[in-house]
Length: 270
Image (cartoon, rainbow, N blue to C red; front, side):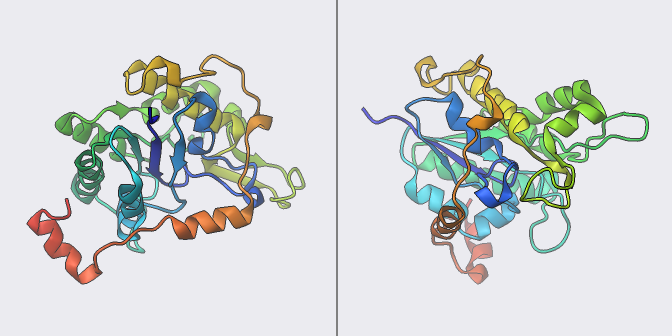
């Protein structure tokens, strides 16, 4: 019996981090702590939008390796909202168009696409009210999931509730907030409102695994530790050379840029 694999396509909120960037952690880096037997293949990459991940051949690599019965978890939005440098997408335009290509690609290979809305950034106003800078991207993913009958794990809505409960101060323990000299990788300290450290990533991964089980996307025997207290010391980091090798290797063949428009219009690349 071949066990299903869980492929991850996403951005810096999902990716596995090298040792040189610890204690920054993506939730995909620790998802394996909540599943058993099903291998987690984390192909997410920092700085990726739904557009750039596809155009740089990272989706192609996944589709070259995915097999019937596997899951493809798709999580974008944090970078799609950034203007310039060829990564921006409109929420109800190119963002949805690219997400369709991920879902169609998985289904054409007998695999199962799953949309995961991005966790929210840590942004509070002067009165302690939480803002939602991701704007329309989670809603656009929700709409597309409903229209395509793709399962949705709403990490965004769940994270908003958690960030609000923790408040401006408590969320600093979840995000990458470090004082000067607190960690050798960040000697000058850091105040990062986008990227998580161990506890934040572990709880996001626990939510994702719990939703996979609740929605019967994998049978119960594939899950573990959903109620366990897992310390940050359980987080493992890739050696930098392994990280660099995987980054370079996990790129597949994509059509030449000049041919992409015709392929999309014809439906050959959906």
